[in-house]
Image 1 (cartoon, rainbow, N blue to C red):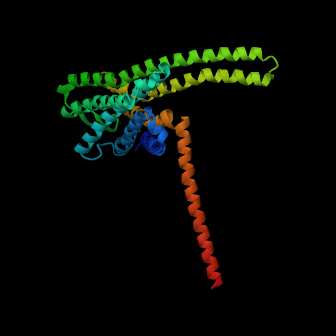
Image 2: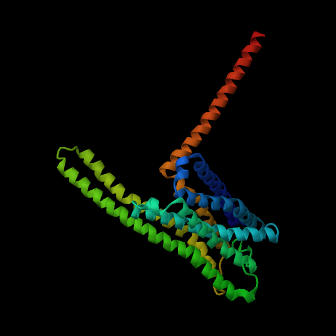
Image 3: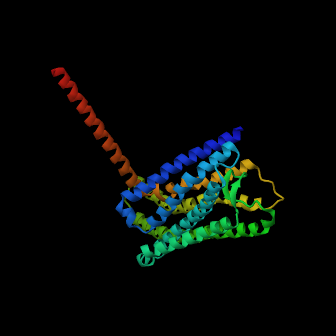
Length: 337
């Protein structure tokens, strides 16, 4: 193995471990907190977490083995199943992010009618469409034998070995990425930019009230005035940062891989194998970032996972103190004997 392959293998191992821990923690929060389970977005986050966990335990290990051994890990049947899952899970996770953005758009732009427009039944219908949309492409690819081990990405993924099917495969790949990556990106940009517009409008209203209050309070201390102005500035930046994170991580993680897949269809451009694996690792990094972007850094999830950790630590400390006291009692009995 070259130094590049060692580094890439190490990166995949780190991504696997962090993704597994983070997504399991999100799942634990969902199971632990009744309040999270009651919320409609919890269904979308649960679906996204399911996709991320399955991607972590099925696709990442085979990519790691492909980097190390430079050949297809396992038999053809295993590779076909993993390639099928990779196409399905990637599309499903993209559409789940789009569904979350639609939920936020309805909640912010139509707050009074949110509970009537986004119920559990509506979320279940959206998820049903997400699954049907996601499973249709790998079914077509598997039926046409367009799934296999791709050396450029060291992964089991969409791959055409027959030159006579090249035109059909190019069309299929273009349609697939248009209806998965591009469609999800358009939905994300449309919904979150609408949310940002409403957030900025409310910030302006709050700013006007704040400035009027500061003008009226003539005797207010300068330090208090300064803190109010700083909070005003942070409030304006908060929504922009969050929405930039949602859209930015989606583009940063998926765009290099999707562009590489499309450029690869051209026989004119040669793609370096190391770049192919790097673009795949960037796509895998979305599995790592999703738990933090959509769940663990939010107040409700943060409070829940802190409660879980404290509960575990408290239980372990109780057990250790019980063992200590039991050992102490045994020592006293031995001395008395």
